[in-house]
Length: 300
Image (cartoon, rainbow, N blue to C red; front, top):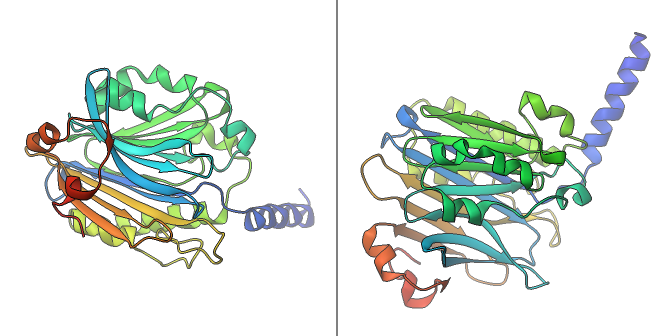
């Protein structure tokens, strides 16, 4: 092949990627087994969206099962779940498939986070029923319990790919990285590439087993500047930025501990440290938002 043609093609590809605006960005990461200090699982998400979105924690009861979810409400007042954990200790977090056009991202079935939280108790149970992912829209998930984590990539047309580990770490941003679905990427944002590279670097170079505090440090990393960091501040008031951090520690033989930071625009930043033990679930039996006295423990 002519070298000039090849160089021109590579330049055009790099130009296309560099000019692509970010879309519905999030960063997902998790670790389990010997890679965590507790021997259990750590699983995390930074939620990035346009500033108009407002986040809150909500208790939800459906089909006789309860979960704690991070929900967002936009200008259209439609409430969307960003992730959650159920009373059995199963956590699921989602991220947009920003490397495919918005029209394709909105084609397919409804999101599965609430279904997973009200239907399954473990990662293995989800993976035994993984055909459910063929019936949803393009999206990425990370799922974790006390002994395993998995990432699921859902592409247009009901195609999906699963990776799991019981002794290692996984991470994801907003484009397809599984070999089977690489062709599903139509345009990869520079922010997605930069954040994936950075979270991989942080996790790979961290020699000792991870702690929840380590994951907090990762969540606040600003290495890539206002638009390409794990914690994004946005280069203009209208640009997407990080609106929340969700980190849960699920030890092998103890109740989960949840850390949440909400950075709603126009409100003071709030952080919560919650022990999701049996008394927490016994106290919070009604569906609805958690606010006021409901979050006195660990809130500031």
